[in-house]
Image (cartoon, rainbow, N blue to C red):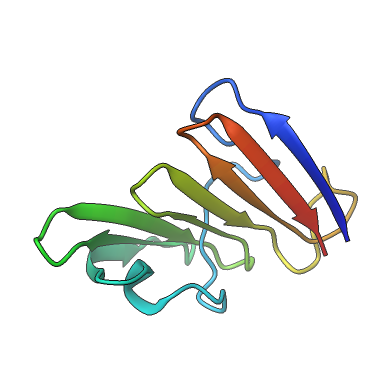
Length: 114
């Protein structure tokens, strides 16, 4: 397994995919994490879906995107984003599956190739 860390200049994740996504098969906590519940979302005509979460006080607490190709993105609402590529990887990763954690608070990102 390969790891690398890079500095992120902005808050936008750039991947070969045009959209941020979530795969329901991810091992993400139900409801987006402890004390959170799904409060909204939907699915577009391409089969891509979006879910928003709120905390026990009803305040926004993150969101996730899902795509039919199996890639995913989850933002916990506290400055951390988690992207998982499709199991067959992407063109830019040379067909190797990977996951990326971005800490928007510190501006760092680490990627793990599977």
